Figure 1: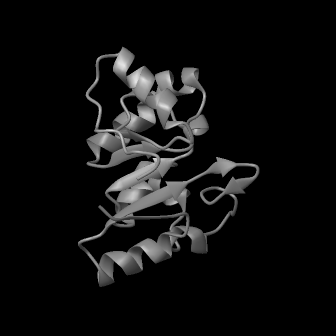
Figure 2: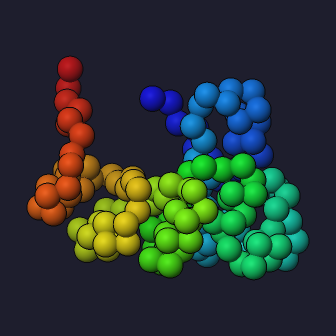
Length: 142
């Protein structure tokens, strides 16, 4: 039930070595306000010294090379093709932070494995409307 997520992939590699039973999630963003993938022309410490150019521009390939099993990209930059590529490489794709109903629907259409949202009620409603299985809700108060 514990998942370690980080934009700093070095941290995830340490967790994989020290506590391999814990799931690790490789976060990525390629936005003007945060870019841990393409912001540098050279290898980035954020990506454990890997650079996307060495993987034909493929972030899923880079995550796989870093030892990842779950890739968590910002939802605004993901494509259906990238989801397919990641899943074919054996990665699960969990997008973040998906709040608008139209974006939630688009991510479900893309076939992502998981969605992080600040509005789980919206996410649950859309998932239910599609007839997809839902986990038991977690009470807000004990």
